[in-house]
Image (tube, rainbow, N blue to C red; front, side, top):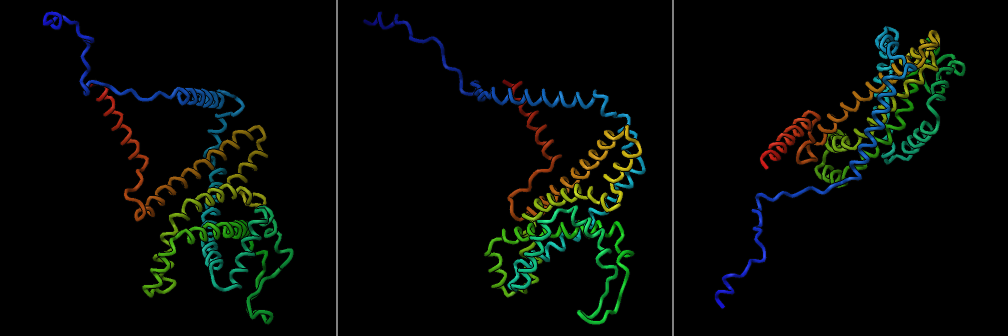
Length: 321
């Protein structure tokens, strides 16, 4: 009996590997790899077509990109955008406060203004202001329905730049008002009640408590409006102001063979401007999120450093195994 037990063959001669030597294989995602490969092929084809198609005339693109005429138009675009963004935001804040006011007159006037300028196309507003002198040749300041103390010629005051800035600002204020109003309403009601319980003045409550918190919601939405404003400046060409798009249109009429490279020049500059605004947006959002997040979101440079560090650690781990 003992000999039969001693001579018994074990069921398995393979010993289990230590837990430290076992390797956990990640779950495979073949669909993700296939989709990525298809996207890369499509992107490569697009880039190849842009680089090799002679129709785009990249040599003429390089010639026109930094021409003084284009840069002068770019400067006008920046000026119109800056003035309109500031005036539009200030007007939007006033309209938003009027919409939230307890005065029925202020609420009604603000609502009608927003409704009107969000309904009328921007090009109609610009053309209407451009021909405003046909309706009112002179403007005056004085007693309502009474004598005028100061009178001036509207045609001299309303230059092409003034018409463009006023038209864009009026239109921008209507959209900015809803952005600001939504941001104010996003602030928790308890913040308003706490500020009122402390006996703080209304102006102090708004500037130091409510509005800074509302900016976290206002910033991304208003930046979208700002990007739309940059592209909307291309319409000032129709009121005889040669901005970036107007300069491209003018040069395209003079050099019809360079229409495509000129349009590519305008496209490239608009991409540069909107990309710069997006970068500014990231850092502004990061600044105003300090009190709402436990840790600030990493900057692009920090993301690159973290990715490289993780990649090195993964390579070392693979080599050790």
